[in-house]
Image 1: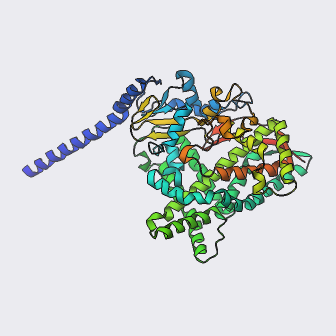
Image 2: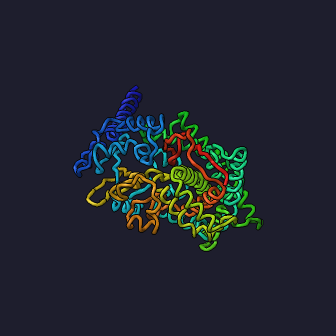
Image 3: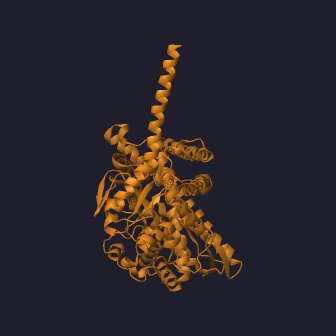
Amino acid sequence: MMRMEVFCYLFLFSFSIIFLICAWRVVNWAWLRPKTLEKWLRGQDLKSNAYRLFYGDIKELAKMRNETKSKPMKVLSDEVVPRAIPYFFESIQKHGKNSFVWLGTIPMVIITDPDHVKEVLSKHDTFQQNLTDPVVYKLSQGLLKYEADKWSKHRKIVIPAFQLEKLKHMVPAMNKICSEMVGRWEEIVSRNESGELDVWPDLKTMTANVISLAAFGINYEDGRRVFELQCEQAEDAMELRNSVYVPGGRFLPTKRNRRVNEIDKEINAVVRRIIEKRIKAMKEGEANNNDLLDMLLESNFKEIKHHGNQEFGITIEEIISECKLFYLAGQVTTSALLVWTMVLLSRNQEWQERAREEVVHVFGDDKPDFDGLNRLKIVTMILHESLRLYPPAPSITRIVKQDAKLGNLSLPAGVLLLVPIILLHHDREIWGDDANEFKPERFREGVSKATNGRACYLPFSGGPRICIGLNFAMVEAKIALSCILRRFSFKLSPSYAHAPYTVATIQPLYGAPLILQNL
């Protein structure tokens, strides 16, 4: 009997200790630490709304995002910052550029000074990817989710596949797929002298087909399931960003989490089959070494052979992760760039004609070739200006991994940083009073001259972690635009509704219906 009483007392005592520890952690997470950080940040003249238990600014952020999604812009203009990052834009309007917002229990400091932005992007060991962010956690694959030595190793192995010399081999595949899309458009338009067509679905299909063929040597039908699942991931991730982050919450057996695991499992299975089939072909001497997957595997094998140790290479699971990144980034980035470029050229006919004249002058009736793409000065200016007004990703986030200084700011570990790319791209203090206007001549002498060397133009991020696929995207976009311009003139349809909307990238919520006319 005595033993039972002692056991009960010990159990109750242990349970009480565990309960108190858990209760303390919850109180610290939900109240004490946020209030400490709030006091620290306000002491440095950073302004924000007062911290609200658990939610912070999440409810208002979600409400504004839903309001943005509910209707198009009243006026057709390129002043799209309030739609792309509505809550952050409103916070800056209310509190000024030296401000922060609350993502649940975590403060996020908005970084708008180009010098500070440059420092954040260059010191990637101090300011790292925030893997607690649902969007980053779910969509970041490969290089995007690694840090420090592991990131360096992966980048060394992956980057050879994206060298300009390697991209030359992918031009024929890009030409083939772009020509097929343009051919379908011609059939539609040929029934009349002109025709209305929503180009957005076709541009998504075309860029998905390019990445499938150029990266993996497979057709779009085989890769379609991966894209469908990744689109579902993107939508789900954006919804999760509008909810309170609870540590460990993604491991709970909820319906949403089960679906997340199902998606990951299915994508991994599809990509694994592609990789294993390619490895077998390489061992049998049947690979052609002309697509991204072949180049990645070849680079990996060379690294392992050079050092004589498997540890210097990357595993099959890590190759799968890199391939998932190829799929996602290779499709969504270029399709967004192309659709906004076509919308802008529809509204700026003089630039459309100038681009067309240049394409015809450089290529004539021949297919676009790699060397000719480098001579497309006007097309390049137009693409840069399109990326300025409608950057694929409107913002990027980082987490302060260790106490750090940023200019005059002293930032404690755990604080989030937001770099509002689209705000920097539209900042009148940087670009002038016409910052919201389409003026490709800004880039007449290149990006460096247009920005005066400042970190204020970041369509592919910046610093050491700049997107390694930027050359791939620009080559593909130039080829697609060249094919389209030579065959069609185009203008906005009366049914077009201007509604930029952020999922993983800035996309046209109601599509992009244009009136195309054969030339």
